[in-house]
Length: 286
Image (cartoon, rainbow, N blue to C red; front, top):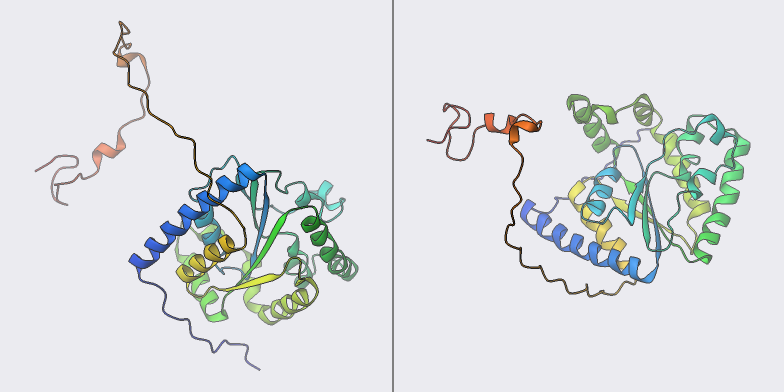
């Protein structure tokens, strides 16, 4: 039986409309963060989904203009030997948001229900224990006042294949393609069943799953940010008025000679500038 998707991706927004809406939403994100800081809110957003589903791109757009002092991305590597001897949730809980913070998890404790379960990195007993404990843990987080939002980025197998092929040719994104990623091709149906089983147990009223169709990256980013903002009851916080002081007149300070310091070579000066052509000398205006 074929597992190929018959769903065709919709046309995404135009570049102009996408950039305009993204800018509007990112302004709202900054306003939302200011409210979180002022109110002492704690926001935890979990990004899960297939490999190459667009989670990283969405996280990048969410974080782009936020203040990194009170917003951060958590993307944990494989557990150390010490961490393997801990309670499974422990290393994640250590990174939960404090008052006034936003934490975006690029994958999370749900690794256990996905890649670890499908590829045999955990025992059946560990898997069953996780499914039993995760709704309890998440209810406790919400009960304690954390706003927990969970997103699943859904990508078709055909689109995933295209993105893997693109990464293979791109020297700047080649690192994103691992042996584990390639197994997501051959084990597609196992991952599908694992996701279905995970949703059955963990799609709870206190912390439901929200699915984002992500075959069209631009649409997925707009939809993710728009929905995220709708889940946080923030209010606009008026920033304190700031006025720039007049720059005082120069006193008798004299800057030391440039020759006394080391400067980074001006590589940019070798590049063509405005008003030059490809055949003109580098850095010379016509």
